[in-house]
Every structure is written in structure tokens, then in C-alpha cells.
Length: 217
Image (cartoon, rainbow, N blue to C red; front, side, top):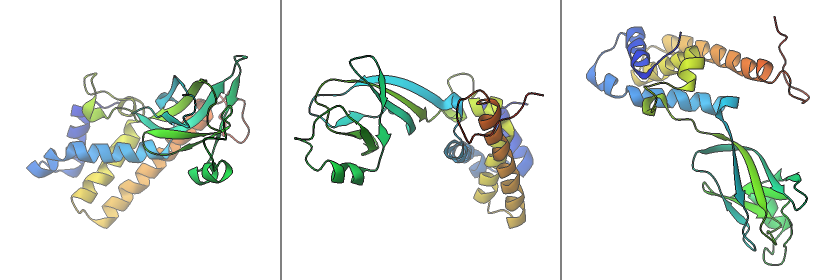
């Protein structure tokens, strides 16, 4: 089973038995709210991206991609073509450890999210360095898909998407608490399976400690 935007909306209406105009007009918002919950809860490899950029001499700030959700890693590529991974810190740490940006210049060792559009680096770059960032991006909503109403969640995690939508739909409808609780439980179970799939099968060959691994059947 998989969902397009059309079949997802139709299924939500079938489950809720609601075709009232206001409800139907708000289905896009309901779906987006469910997608946001899923995207915030699981780190899916399909939503991971890589970009290259450069630092600016004497400028501690570097731009963040517009579709940025949260970072995975940020590395400086040094003159030996080696990746030096920066440690992710809080802005307060950067300010306290490097109080004088103008005089604390070197190859960056730390970074922090300064705003929605910029990271701050420390020390302040003393040269132009190439940066490589891996990050999780905010995927296009199924409501705004340019591929015929398809999305990764609709194709690969239809149960999670549906139950998330039903929780939001019944909340919108001010439905019975027991119905909302039932769909919330189904949503969490589906979300846990999606997380297990992600951590176990998609990373079964990852060279990391502490990760769930699932043996092939």
C-alpha cells in the first residue's frame, strides 16, 4: 500500500466519515502537521543531503541551506585534502571560548547554529576553507509534491503517515479522547517500526557502536 495526495485525502475522509467542507479544505494543513511530527521524530537516510561551500576570511559566519532541518556533520577540508570534522557546540560556548573573534583566527574547530540562516564558526577562519556539510533536510510535503502527489513517506511509510494524519484529523474535529488515544498509539507503534527499520536495516553495515542491527532473514 502507498499513498498519493488524492488517495491519502480520500482515506482520511473514509476513516473519519467526514466530508464537511471546512474539514476537507483543511486536509492539507492536517497532513502537513502529521508530516512535521514524523520528520521531527525520525532521522531517515532518504532525507540526508550533502553540500559543499566555503568560508570567508575573517568572517565567522557561514550560510545554512534553505531546506536545512538539523546537522549531521560539518567538516573543513584542509590543504592536505583531509576532512577535519568540527564539533557541534552551543553559541554560548563559542562566545565564551573565543570572546574576541577579530583576534582568534585559525582553521575552525567548532560550529554552532547561530540563527535560522547561519552557523557561527570558531576560531574565525583565517583563510578560505572548503566546507562539506551533511544534514537532514525538510522533504517536500506530499501536498506540494511536483511528482503527481507522491512523497517518500507516502510511498515508504504509508501507515505512519496515515495514523499521524488521523490523530491530527480527530484533534481538528475535537473527536472523542479514546479515538484520538487509539490512533495516537497506532501512530507511535508505526513510528517505532519506522525507526527500527531505519536504525536496523538501513545501517546494518554501519561501522558504529550502539546502533540497533537487524539480521537478514
